[in-house]
Amino acid sequence: MKTALYNLHKELGATFTNFMGYEMPLKYTSIQEEHLNVRNKVGIFDVSHMGNIFIKGDAEKFISKITVENASKIKSGMGQYTLILDYDGNIIDDEVFLHIGDEYLFIPNAGMHEKIHKWMEKNLEGNIEIKDVSDEYSILAIQGPLSMEALQEILRIDLAKLKLFECCELKKEDFKIEFDGRCILSRTGYTGERGYELYIYPKENAINIFEELLERGKKYGIMPIGIGARDTLRLEKCFMLACNEFKGGRNPIEAGLEWTIDWNHDFIGKEALIEFKKKENYEKLVFLKCLEAGIPRQDDEVIKNGEKIGNVTSGNFSPCLKTGIAMAYVNNKYAKEGEELYIKGRKMIKAIIVKPPFVKRGEC
Image 1 (tube, rainbow, N blue to C red):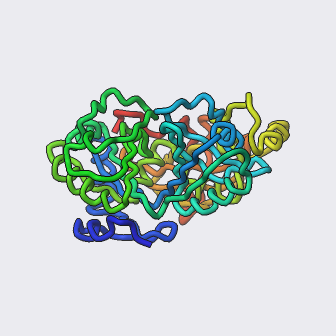
Image 2: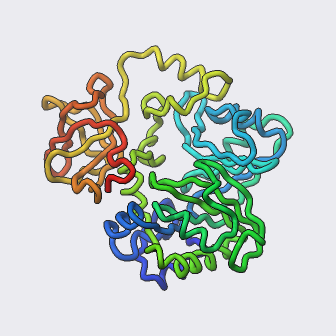
Image 3: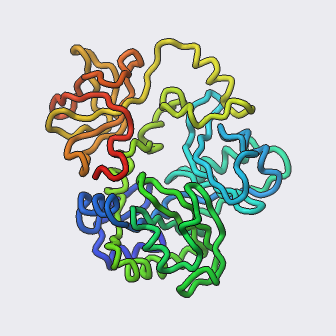
C-alpha cells in the first residue's frame, strides 16, 4: 500500500521500506542527520500508515469500557494516550484518542485499524456509531523544538495557546494557504520533542500542506523525515512500538504502563490485571544502555551470570548518545536501575539498566 504522498516522497529522493504493508520513506538523506534535525530544529513526517477511527453517540461510557481511561475526564478539546486490552488484560494496542465536539477520533497503530475496529464492534454497547476512515485520511507530524514556528507559517491560530495533548478542528479560514476539507490538529507526537499532528481529509490535501511546510519552513531548517529516524527518536525517549513491545501479549504491568490505568472504573481486562498483580515472578520491561561498542537488535538475548533472563524488544544506535540502546523484558528480580548484564547478538555487549528516558529534552 502507498500513502497519498508517495509520489512526493519519490520526488524528494526518499529511500523506501515496507512497514506493516505500506511503502514508507525510510530516509531522505541519512537516519542520523534526520534524527538530529528533529532534536535540534524541526522535521515533517508522513505517518498516514496510522489508522483513523471515529466514534459518535453515547461514547463516553463505551470508551471507558474498552480503554483503561475514564473517558469522562477527557473533555472536548483534549486528547489522551491510553491502552486497549483484551479480556486477559494483555495490550492489543496503545493509542491516542482525541475528543472533538460530539465525537472521538482514535488513532490505531499501523496495521491495527481493522483489528481495533472489529474489537470495538464486538464489544459495542449503547447508541454508538463507529466508522473506520483510515483509507480516507492522511496524517502529518511536525516535530522538533521549532515545530511551532514552522507550523505557524501556514496557520493563523495562535499555536502557543495549544497545550500538550490539546486538540481542535481547524476551519478553512484558519489556514494561510489554500485548504478545502477537514483538518484536526493535536499537540501530540512520537519523538519526545514539541510537536503537532494533522489529520487531513481528503487525504490528497496533505500533499499541498507538506509542500508548503517544506518551503515556508526553510528558515527554521525543516526537513522531511523517514521512519528510520522516527524509530530512533522514539527509542531514545523510551516510547514503545506496538509490534515490538507488545508482541506476543504483554500487559500494562509488565510493560511499565500501569500509570496509564484509571483503576476507579470498570474496563475490559481489569479483573485479569488485578489477579496478575498478585504474582511475584514475571518479566518486566527495562531500558538498557550499552557500555561497549555494538548495536542491540530485536530478539537478542539478555544474559546475566551466563544465563538467559530475557529478550530485547527494540534496539538501535542512539545518534545523541553515540552508543547502543535497547528495551528488553527481563525477569523482574533483575529489573533494577544500575543492574549490569549482557546483550547477546552478533557479539556479547555489556549494558546497564537505566532510568528512562535515555535522552532528556535539550541533551542532544
